[in-house]
Image (cartoon, rainbow, N blue to C red; front, side, top):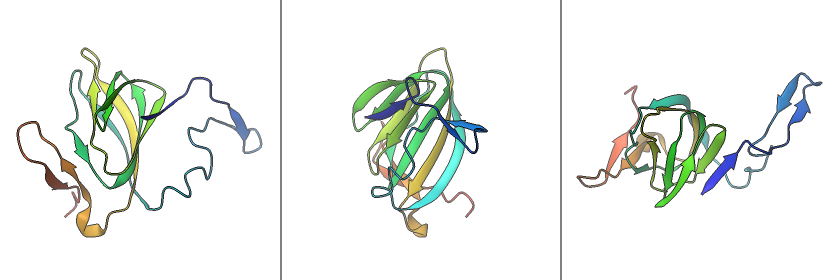
Length: 140
């Protein structure tokens, strides 16, 4: 699982010393691997003890935890996930995020997509039912 932690990362001075940056991925590091478009950038929250339904999509998706703790589940692998950590979810891997009991989670998220306009969405894997495609073209 590709979880990047804030702890121990080098702080770099940029823009004539006006910005202090900490890179989870260095500039150009993913150029050869990620070829798509920025599908979305958002902040989301899930309630205490809540789990996002397992799903997959043709994107590189990144979650950064702002508040709360939980468990990230990617392709059956589970790992604790908390503030200051960034996870990269590679395309088409089934994934979910489960918030710990007693603590809601708030995350910053963005995705690089490879989907054509008529296939923007995800495949849901409900506990009681068959996998199915869900369109995320909310504006249609």
